[in-house]
Length: 345
Image 1 (cartoon, helix red, strand yellow):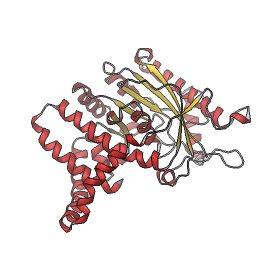
Image 2: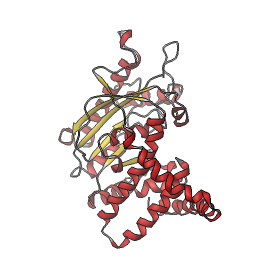
Image 3: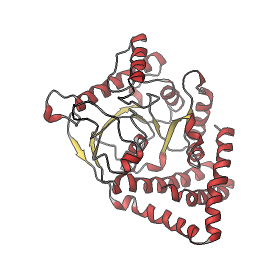
Image 4: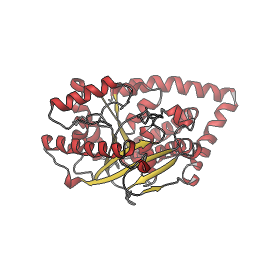
């Protein structure tokens, strides 16, 4: 996956130069298509190669929509789950993320996520509301389709980090909110700004609850969700995804009511995860209530992207000049990306 990044960057760069004289909407359409190709290749490894079984509770709309995707956050593999759902809706190219600010320093990927419409945010008092609004407005004004992924907890829930969980529960108690056991207390700022800024552009919210099977020890205690390397080493046999769509008209626009609504949604997640990990009926352990339907991703959705990007990468590695260009793309692409993402946050 990492090996194809320079070839992808060169392809994107060529298109970016050609599109400078074209309307922004035309550029975004092909950028979404290029992004879809790359992320399809990623899904080949995370889903087809690993053989993980995806079990979905609820019905994913057949038509593409402009949405905000709200999910619980447990591990570095969580962003892949958004891709898994989006590709089943033929909306993979529309996925954009709200990410913590430190990720902008990722070589090549950090600035590319930003130019694709991603938003980097800092926590608490350092949160730049103006920058986020500006970025989202630029996307919506040019008509870019939106599948904006947000993890409102702000950091990962890890059952081994009891101090983080205790601080989150103490904050909920202080604010008069219900204490959650299997998620952290959601923070509303990024979600609210996204909702308010794009309210005329959005169709709804996808409320997603994710549970990774194999995260219970022999004593029945919850253990950390798999990291990306562990996931690729096939240490997760099955992923359970609870999908619930909320129409945009049902979501309150006033901050105080929106905060209550968001916490209510996380109370629902907490109950679902309690049923998953601690059911009253032992036969229902490690599954959500209701009917879960296995969903297999066809190779025809991912293998062509592997072949395209592999075909672009191989010539770079077969000649000395190609290898030099490959290395320079990593180095200069990373340096220019760091400058770009800080100049245009």
